[in-house]
Image (cartoon, rainbow, N blue to C red; front, side, top):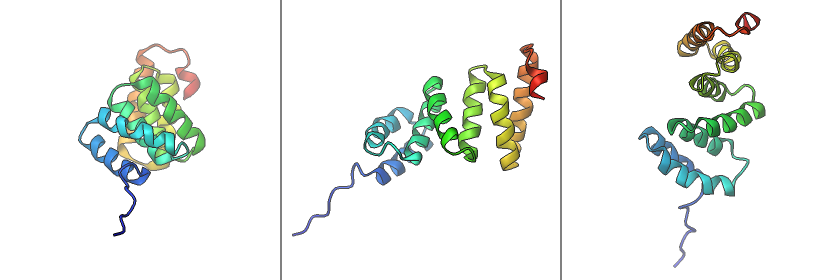
Length: 137
């Protein structure tokens, strides 16, 4: 009798399972299945996006920043990646680096959450006394 090939580790199935795990706030488990799938499909933007989300949830901000910077470089119009990069930079108190990404995300999306993010980062940058704040306006 014919047995279809197992799809346990198929990248599409990994994507769906990792998404579920991230919605359940289980980023460690998501990373366990994402890393081997990314090794198998290193060019998969969707898998790398989920990995960045998992790193963000785990507060592994350096790793999230690295993944998101590559995603933004590869697709500058990816609003989610750009906003997520801004949030990761903001959480690391890199307000001057976060602000351009936050502004672009807000301009591209018109999302009130993104617009509120611009105001929040601008305020935090001003409060930090950053000399470069005026240059960013």
